[in-house]
Length: 77
Image 1 (tube, helix red, strand yellow):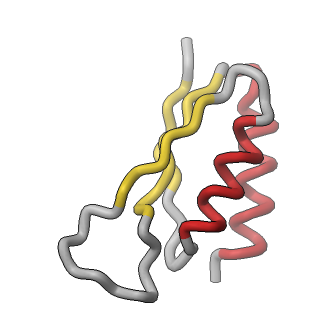
Image 2: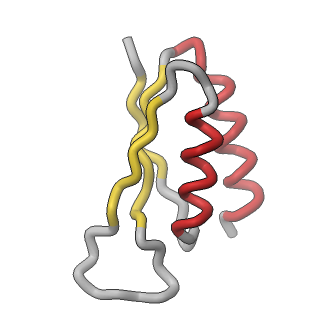
């Protein structure tokens, strides 16, 4: 059974979300979808992406969490 997790980082730009998605997609059995921003108002400080949907097998949990921790430590204030 796959785990589906919604990942959201505050104030992270589109390029970083794409980097995270590319990094996660390198893992076999991991699928990533970008979630478009739902706010009707444009704010330059907000990302154009509201988050990621990440689907993965339980056997990949540790690797997924390590990758997310890296980006969380580096980009989330």
